[in-house]
Image 1 (cartoon, helix red, strand yellow):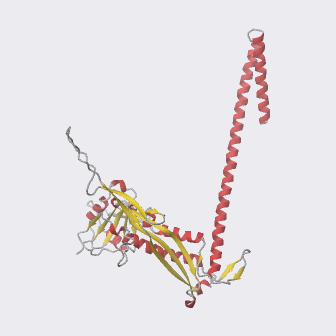
Image 2 (cartoon, helix red, strand yellow; image 1 turned 60 degrees about the horizontal axis):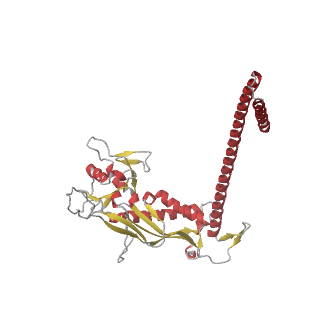
Image 3 (cartoon, one colour; image 1 turned 90 degrees about the vertical axis):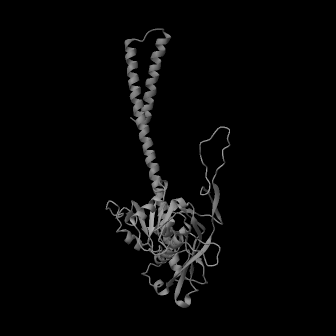
Amino acid sequence: MNYKGLVEKKNDLITRAEEILKDAETNKRELTDDEAQELAEIRDDVRKIKEALKIHDEIKDEKKELKEEAAEDMAEAQAMKEAACKEEADRRAFEAYVRGVVMNERGDATNMTKSANGAVIPTTIANKIIAMVYNICPILERSTKYNVKGKLVVPYYDETSNAITVSYATEFQELESQVGAFDKIELDGFLAGALTLISRSLINNAQFNIVDFIVERMAYAIKRFIEDQLLNGYVPSGAASGVTGLSTLTNSLTAAATTAITADEVVRLHDAIKDDFQANAIWIMSPATRTALRTLKSTTGYYLLNDDLSSPFGSTLLGKPVYVSDNMPDMAAGKTAIYYGDMRGLATKFSEEMSIEVLREKYATQHAVGVVGWLEFDAKVEDAQKIAKLVMAAS
C-alpha cells in the first residue's frame, strides 16, 4: 500500500474509534465486549501503520541525503575539473608566450605583435612555485608566518631581569612590586630577487617541458636563498638592519671542541628546550654533522641517532626528526653546528607576495629568455625559549 493509502487508513481507524467512544459516552454506558475488542484491534492497527509511516519517512530522508551528497560530490568534481582546466590553459598560454606567440580567444596561435618585457606568469603557476618552496624548506614551513604589509611589531614579555615573585609576608608590612618588562620584535621587509635564464634552444624543443623546468629551477633558487637567510641571517655591510633569522638566538650551548660533538652535549642541547615545547621540536644540521653524530652512543651503549623510515629525512635523534641542510655550517671553530627546538619560535613575514615575470627581449642577444622572481620578507627570533643552538668552541 502506498504512503497516501496508509495515512487514509490510519485516519479511518481513528475516526471509527472516536465514534465507538462517543456512542458509549452519549448513552452513558460501558463498552461492550465486542466494542472493547474492536478498539484494541484499532489501536494495534494504528500502531503498525505509524511504524510503517515512520520507516517510510526515514527511507525518504536517507534518499534525500544521498541525493544531496551526490550533488555535492558532482559539484566538487566539477570545480576540480574546472581548476585543472584553468591550470592547463595557463600552462599552454605561458608556454605560447615564452615561445613568442599568443593565443587568441579561439585558441589559435598568432604572431606576437608587440613588445612584452613584463608579462606576469598566471596565478596558478606562481602559486605552485610558492607551494614547492614550502614543501622542500621545513624551516620556513614550520616557522610562524605573517603575511602583512609594512612593519609588523610583535610584543613579548621578558622576565630576564625582573619577574613577579611570591614570598612569605608579615601582616602590616608592604609587599614589594615585581613585574617583568614588555618589549617588542619588529619585522620589516627586505627586497630579494632571483633570476633564471632559459636557453631558446630548449624553449624551441617541443619535447621539453618548459613550465616545469622554470618552476623547478626558480623554486630551488628561492629555497636555497630563504633557507640560508633563516638559518644564518644576513645584514648588508653598512646597513643598520637586515634579515637576522636564527643568527641572533640567545639560547646557546658551546661545545668543548672545535670539530667534534659529544653525546653529553647533544643531550644538554635537547634539554635546553622546556618540555612544553618538545612536542614539535626538530634537529637541523649539515649532512657532515649528521654523519659525525651517527657514531655517538648513550651511556648504555645505544646509538643516539637512529634510522627511521617514518621520519621526514629518514633519521631521528633522541626521538626527534633530523633535518639536514647544505646551508648549515659544518663543525668548525666558532660555527653554529646544530639548531634544536620548535621552529615556531622563528617569525617570518612576507610583505610582498612573490611575483614572477618573463623577460623576453632583455636577453635576446644571448639567445635566452629570463624569468625573474621578486619577494619582500623578514625573519627574526620571536620566542627564544623554543629554540636552542650548539656553537663549536672558538679555539
